[in-house]
Image (cartoon, rainbow, N blue to C red; front, side, top):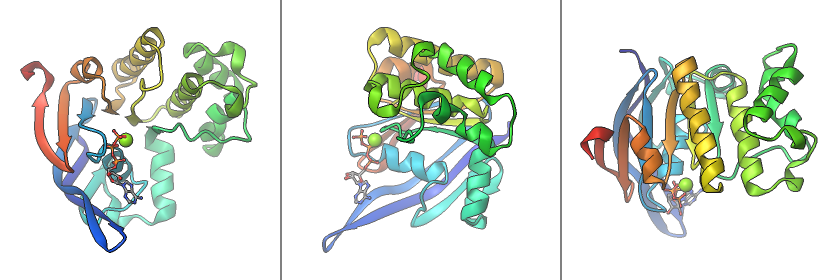
Length: 229
Ligand SMILES: Nc1ncnc2c1ncn2[C@@H]1O[C@H](COP(=O)(O)OP(=O)(O)OP(=O)(O)O)[C@@H](O)[C@H]1O
Ligand SMILES: [Mg+2]
């Protein structure tokens, strides 16, 4: 099996005042291509930090990350951006939509960056999949939290990533919409073979994934196949 993500002895700390706060300590795991992988743990345990490092959005203090066969240490900022644009989708905990762009424009930005044509149709199709056909011209400030989350999801899907990192993808959604979104994520995994790395507090969602990594206080508590739970 090809490893799409290889995280080796990762460490990250922040300076807060005169104190050093260790947020991640000696984290190692590997994910196979096409796998579904959940990261769970209490608030503050380092889940979002770990996702940002694994996706090459931030830099670790210690350890190495191989993403899509490339050691991120060997890439400069531009090369990282290129790798992310072509292979990686990211759904942020706080969505990070561009405030001056409409829902549709937000969804097609990654495609435009890749120089694709016919992007409007693709964007509209994706927004329709997440139930937002009648919101395509809304700006983020005119959308509810759950709607913004669904736009972020459509955007992450748009470039057909080989690996998708999702930070609490159902965190702001009602049960029914949450289930729809989960269905979309797993459809993407089945149909396009997209590897899913999902941070979640929702244990039902975590159990749908093949593997579950449990973090506590920045350390790995357990790395299990979900059937074992
Ligand atoms: N830029 C930063 N500077 C200082 N401390 C930070 C910074 N970013 C995160 N932290 C700290 O690192 C710890 C882990 O944060 P992180 O966002 O990874 O937690 P999390 O597991 O995603 O929590 P949640 O479930 O609440 O989203 C927290 O205690 C947080 O206060
Ligand atoms: Mg978080």
